Image (cartoon, rainbow, N blue to C red; front, side, top):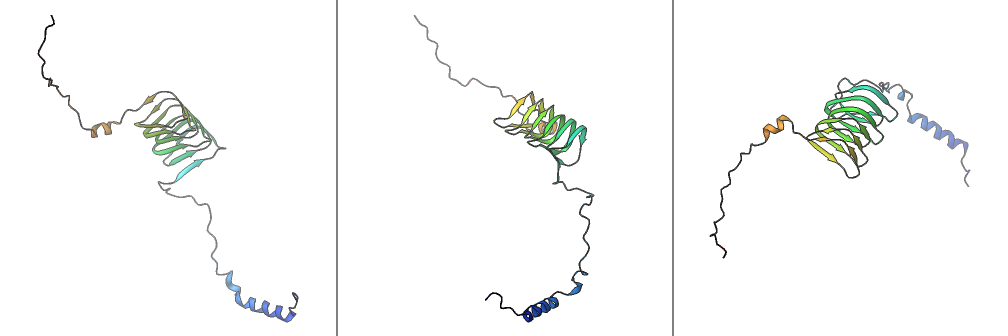
Length: 178
């Protein structure tokens, strides 16, 4: 029942398949372009990752957002960009960035022009300085906090003049006790 095919049926099927696929199908394909090309201008949204097996000792500077999962000792300078210390990140450095988010551990002073966030699993031992600071429940922080506004933000605030208070309470008659 299952093997009722005749050899003639197989030949016909094979011949018809040959006609369906032209021989020049492989000749028309374009060669593949190289997979790894350096990008001349990285986009602003691009985030560079430093993996957990990477150890950097020295000064780390850049013009892109950065996520660190590895270890860094020294100085990290990302003036106008975001820095994320991932859960496996171990940093022993002075940090200066626009926004700093700590999920791992940092030993050293941190300065940010916008915000410093220490998440629940984050740990910071050092002084932090930023106009805005967020420390989640369960986060570890030991150091001092400086939340001074930048001079630009002070100029935008309206100036408040002291107000003289006048005594508006009605005076009560003085009663002498006998």
